[in-house]
Length: 283
Image 1 (tube, rainbow, N blue to C red):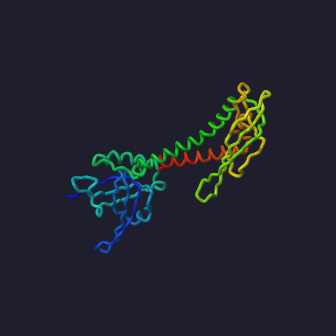
Image 2: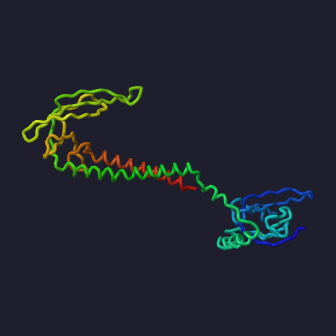
Image 3: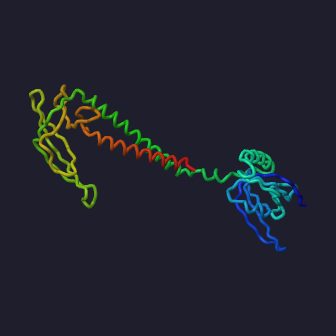
């Protein structure tokens, strides 16, 4: 047996429709998502129908025609009718709507467990996506961290070679071999093996070093180097480093080069971290 029950329910409008019945009368309907995330469709007067826009919030005063001893989830869509509709932002305020939705959720929960919203479904990430996001985050953090690590490493090398003395060595012999990085021989590298003679405390010493050069197969006769004043036979090719403020192996005497390197690392790190956060936690 059908029974009519009056209830006020809030919700977000999800759609509208109309049809002509057998009496040639136009029936206007509006669908909305209730507080329990179930969709409900009721008929409305034309004056309310014209104001119903998808996505707008509203409060409906409904005469619900129900089945199954008054279960709100089993109702007659054709006979159930919204007598009045109050639109949020025009006829009522958002606080009233929120209070209405809270009360509705408690009341509707007596009939059935609320459905999970679409937002909660969308927020779930598959494990592979989370893994990719974490890889980007970790990679970005490592890139950003490489800036202070590089600075600390150069400062540490400066302290490590504090007892080394700068001198100029003379290349007395050199030999080279050629290698490429691809099959088309576009990038040619020369591996140059050199013998360098230098003088320390009135004695001459010779060291053998390997130099990689992309453009030339020979190196300059004079080479900057450092040797250990406690053990002059321990020596290395060296360059002045602006961070270490002394000659060290693999030093760089240009602030511009360092700044460019640090900017690239920071930008790449920030981008990777941002992408990782979006992939892992974004909506």
